[in-house]
Length: 314
Image (cartoon, rainbow, N blue to C red; front, side):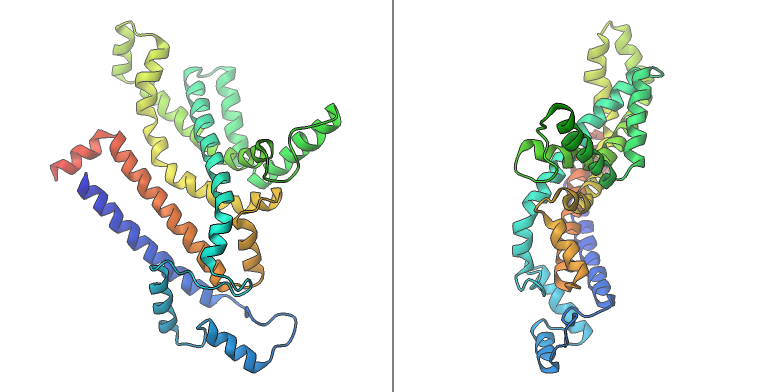
């Protein structure tokens, strides 16, 4: 198991290094100039700005400096905000992380529940209803779902009953946090539900489930102690990509619900060609997601004993 963890860690570090290189190359290829806007700028001032941010150096020297700084925890200075990128991330990431975590919890819990219900009640109205929710979640983008929730829960509910606990925008109350979390989770919830249903149907047809039934175990006990534990392994495998989907989707949802997260900084950075902020947020999220996939790989190895067995044989 130790060898497995070390191997995954090496792959994670190589992936982060590749991400830094690709991000740096893409920033170099962006059109426009971060210092030249609608107004003319003095050439001497422009030259001083290029020198301040190291943009007057040769390409490989810029990359070497940027690469070494990143692994020291320095993501550079934002060109537009004139602040360290790390301070901007530290200020805005908690809201984004909370939104992502809430959405992930909703997606996993409700998705597993719907998948189990659809498999146990196969070919019934419960199965059909669960899969309709899954199809809706996959088909409709999160920003459309967010707008629908704002209209139904914040506007129409107030028109029908005179008041509503759900504000149209904001991030201060639990009610305000519910709508964006639900809007963001629906797509991942649908993926988990469909995957869990397929996996459960496969597990329920296995011989050990039939043996458990023959021993007189209750259906609920079989589902809870035997079926779900084995059927959930494919869901754990896709937790990494699901985490990526949820966290990268926060940018759009944050703007819809006016959440003080990283989304507003990222969108403004793109509009204003703030190279260092774009690159810093991209690398931060990339490293965060690579770490999430790494943890999921280790968790999968802990839950599935076959990985331990294969590593011990090596």
